[in-house]
Image (cartoon, rainbow, N blue to C red; front, side, top):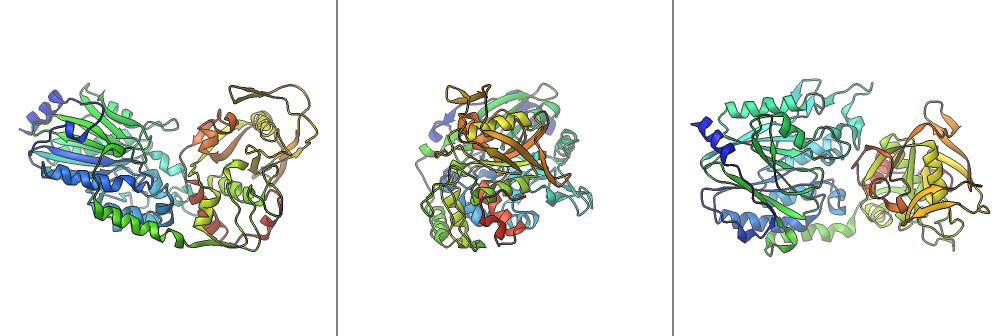
Length: 530
């Protein structure tokens, strides 16, 4: 009977496309409804609405599950200051059933991750995170749930890129040996083994709760999992921030599998509807168009926002950290500032890149001497940029420097704040820059403003002349490295680390864990720190 139902599910699978009106889809009392979010990144606006939508669906069918596909605990000021716990509190209020972990749930370290998971009422599913010391999964891989006529096997999975993002040192011991794995090498075989397991335990419908996506630096994607496995009916997916109302892909046996994803930042609420005979469809409900909210969830969020003015101290400084604004009647977007150095040191140190880089316009305030609060970090870095790492030739970096300083000593938001690299600047030379359609193209022949460019060698522990042919890694914000910001000054590199911590979160990590909450005297002058 179960085999027959499984065949019917595949034979009758269909999709309803589009970002829909919630009233346009008829729900019957025996239907199973799965509501999900992915890549919320701390944007609380959708939680009161998904709570209201859950209640609306429950009035039509008792079989409603709510899922989170990860990256819920990081991204906004509220969740960052609480290290994800405010998001946990809201999800508990709503009554989520299952979550999987995104790469950003690991940002705060494994100890804090354990606190979040322990506090969550929802069950955490993650099949591909294993402690190599015990060869055991850290979290349950799957859960089986009977919902009406269906027995659904939920399997959780996250991107293997998690191991090389944000804080990779948490996955190795003091000698650098791996103590955790995300199963990059055998991911498809691992997923298949758990699909077979839940099928053997009675599941006649399988949902992959996925944070894989289809990202430019990721080879193990949700689409590849579908193509290389059998027995999965639906993949609800996150990580790539794609808006996918409904897409049908073929599995290894050329059977259809439904893939859906809701975007990011609560653009939409995802919904999968499964009929008792196994037919399934998916749609997205635009949060901005859904008119109902759960008032009790709104009240809880308001209490968090009221506490925002009492954010904690993360460090202290005996001197001003100058941004771009006026301090002592001087404009600081035409030279290296100590706040720029501090920020770029944090980028470089945390990602282990050769060079840290930020445009001066990315710093929007200064921080006066005294206690430094998280709110002050948000004032200096308000954009919520994510840190990335890309590779460039030495020549490409030299050209980018020339472009960045082209207007000095006049004020310019493109002026490069850097770490791990230094140079001489002659402002009497006119920069010969070619710009097309507002994007940097090249530096023309002729005299240059920038000379004597040197990069700090971690191997030899000294400054060395930059090699134009050598490849260097640059840690910067996604605005510069992947979103063509600053006139595409550094948008053509090979991305090797994408979607890392938010800049303020990374700064907090550097100030508290690396500098132990005290800004060293070396940052009191406007010189790059080694």
